[in-house]
Length: 114
Image (cartoon, rainbow, N blue to C red; front, side):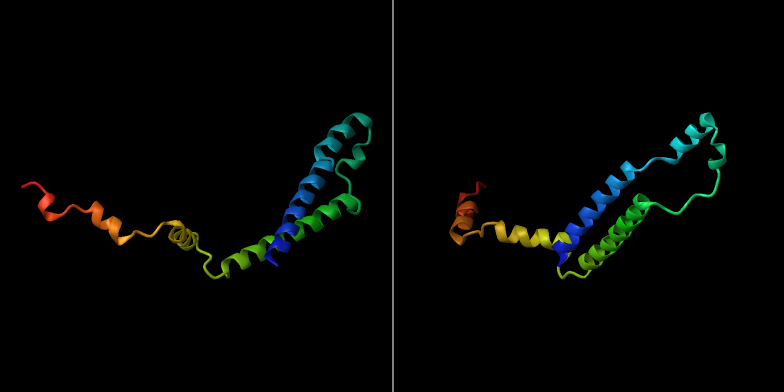
């Protein structure tokens, strides 16, 4: 379930990036209107939103929803602490010390010079 939401999240993020980059900026319309004599449309009433702006709004809504869902799933996962998971991984990968090796490394009382 979490992997599916993550895939939808990444696709929505890529969709938002692509749609925002494809849209014309409002500054381009303002600069073009001064020289073309269409200054009435500069501050005029904007028409209904077109397909690009609606698709961007939908992608942003999906991105926001999946962000909140992933945060909720992450916070309610058991053992979600980074510290706990790293300690568990270290315990799994660390070799266990053998009692024979520990005795060899510790000097005996008679080996210590006085």
